[in-house]
Length: 266
Image (tube, rainbow, N blue to C red; front, side):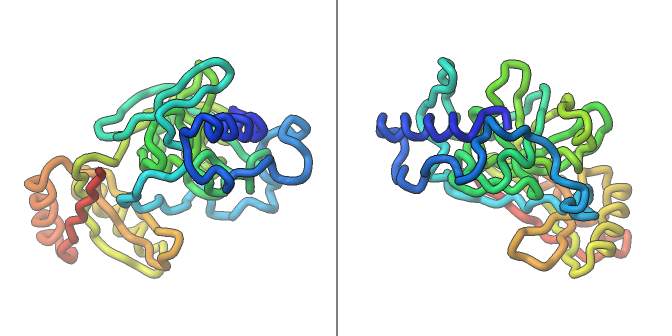
């Protein structure tokens, strides 16, 4: 992580003192054990990495209320003031992404959630917490969805800090940084097609490949943490007319009629 946990703790205390966030008692000092400055960040031991981490299903975008933490009107880090925005609608940017791993695994994020380097999450300086974004590695074309639940990176040359799992999925965990495109999937209304739900990942991935070729649209296999099913989603799509065109195309190719999912953000 590009900002140390101790600095995040001090920043949280400052925000509490300023009355910018409520319920700050949830945040305490850094976890017991070596302080962040005593430990170098890096990847986990090979024996700790799930064998299929690079194929981790994308999180399912959903409408979530703004986090109680991490969304103050403004906050300051090392003399720079940042102003989180209230909506991610239409956000699209390109820049350098980095990743953070063992040094912050198990520690609190700016949202108050526990950082898990094996989940698809990210840190951004100003996007609302939480926000779902699609990240494309412009150096190899690999893509993934991530859920923004933390603040950072606080380096002028970087725009996004990704979890270790996201870096593995995007193919740059061994090089540290990559040039990426970041696109918010949140908006006034975002449309997806759910083309199938499977208990086995292999069947879902087979359908995902077939439909990506058939439709020419982005197709993803996604799984919610509390759901045993692997769902095949197509999108985000622009307009209901396009969604209905794809429904007809998929049915004509002898697949089941996909469901239209509407994701609304406030």
